[in-house]
Amino acid sequence: MLNKLKSMAKQAKAKLDNPKLQKFGQSCVKLCQTTVDKSCSLISVAAKYLHKLGISANMISILGFIIGLLAINFLAMSDFVAALICILLNRLFDALDGALARHTKVTEFGIFLDATLDYVFYAGLIFGFALANPYENAVAACFLLFAFTSSACAMLAYAIVAYKNNSRQKLEITKSPFYLGGFAQGFETLVGMIILCVLPSAFLPIAIILGILCFIKACSVVITAYYNFVIAQRAPKE
Image (cartoon, rainbow, N blue to C red; front, side):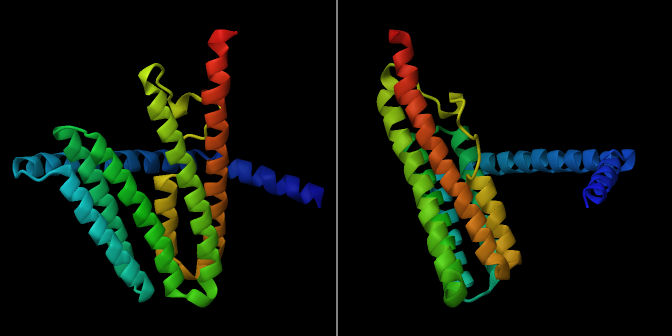
């Protein structure tokens, strides 16, 4: 059995070392990067046009949020295609309001509004999947919502203390050696929601995986907070 596993591992390694496969992977990465760059350029152009029309970033945030809320209704109706369209449009508006804010002025209220609407939007999507199939999805949705709320509360509590201490020492969460970067944040959650719209029958395992990632994120923020607010502040005195 062990020899068979070793043989399978060697075969897998040989396939990964295949120049054609590596070239294909590099092409995919380059294509993705080009797509992202072009998308950012188009969003920037659209933001400039909206700025000339006198449309504010906060207006775009609210409009995108309203579109996102429609996804809850479509999820409850098990119309996952329409829900996916609303989700993608919401994320497009989220990118657009950020680009528009950079063309004008980034305000503290704008940052607050954007973050709040994002959290409510994602929580609403979880509620929508529960409504789609209450008998099978309700418990998993409750677990995911519990985990998501734990992560969100940890992040927001950290932000409050960091903002309070900002007058003397700027505390950046990314500077902690224990912080997991963008782990279990917007991008991973969005990918999970897209997969759920494509494969709604897989809600239970995906919800559990996302929930575990959210709990890991909450724990990492607690450790980060202890490092930055306790250990890091002791260092200069020692």
